[in-house]
Length: 597
Image (cartoon, rainbow, N blue to C red; front, side):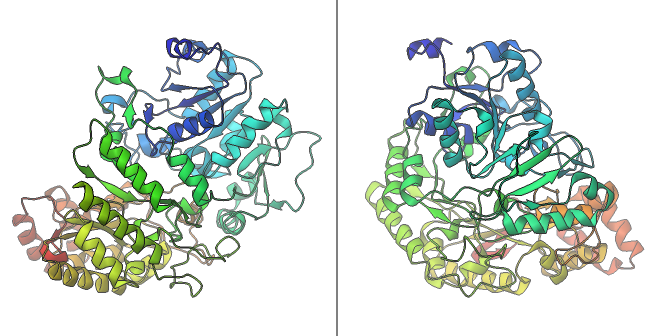
């Protein structure tokens, strides 16, 4: 309230409530939406991690004149709190000091309830990643059940899905003009409840209901495929019934243009967390991204385990080079800057500047799987121009610039010049790539390219690193327990790793993320062709598959040895023991010149 008075405000127009600590940085959604609304002339206040156990914090700033905007923060609250096996995490990187006790179990529901209790009759708008991914009936892996759309359980008025600048601006403008929240039923990128007497929008497409999906797991995959087809700008609105209410989800908003995206990232972010956190300690998530730069949004990779297709969309929205360089200059002038910009990238670093005239209406979920689409331009001219501009900026200022975002290795193979520039100027010793698995059937379920493309990339990476005279390492990501991965598939990957003497440092156990095709596979036990699929379930098998990928870790020894004995594959055991005994001292993922450890 003291800060409101300092600005001369008697009342905020909008109060944003977030389950993350407040960090004024363009990697944090509450900061972007707050700064964006501020730039449009609205008085915006932020309640960051309020105590949900009492209503008083929600009364501390008075009532918002227009609406509450509620978000769970930068990640889904389930993923933030729980691991893939359901264990609680002991650290929350989005809280000061990494404290894990500063957010409720389900923030959207808890905060919405307190906001209603604090001031009656004020509209409540949900937004952010969790709201976006839970806009429809979805699977909750902690409760192991299908859940209603979060808009229903939160008893909110409206939900913003996808990237929120366009819809939130329309909501604010129309409420400020005196319209009621119930009249806002035509804003792209939003979802609302179909109330008594309301007609659904023209051409609405019906998805399998909660009851249908509960009674027939195959309906989960049907709903996924039907919605994926419509989850694009210009697609149809969808309707989904539940036992409590019927939800309408309008098509996503159009991606921002380059000028609009520049305007967002040119806003006056301080790149600091709120000063009140100093006694509690730094916010760990800020420390890793403080001097990073977002160059674009969207991803056309279409991996089945990733929800980006239904959140950011597959159309690439890129900033101008001038805007990116201006942000680099702002970073350099920051008091805490120490000479290094840690990353220039996006969801996938090497998709900057890619444009396809068909992407908005194309029914393909991926432009890269099962092969690179013939309509996708792969010259990377815009990306190379950006890189050359950053190199000149770096040479002129003496600052270092790296690309820490992961890249698509199959896309990188199409342009040797791009990869050469990347390895010579932007790799700080390690480059992230995500082959994810080795076995063809598993990769097909994941929507990932064949493994031989990764092997080609590995060879090219090693060759170009040698030519550049640099000792560089690949950091490959692999996933265990994905639908379609049998114990034999997991063993085949382990055999490949052991045979080559490779010890992974980046392994992720599959988690069924809401709105992803892989989550639908997990629930329905069907692939995207709607054929039966083996699904690893239960702690024992998930631990086994993870242990097989981390065979070199002594904590995996007992599980791996017992499995090899049962499978009559003890021929691998002496090799595994040698690799356990010869563990490297450094934490790198690969040997010099692009080879694995």
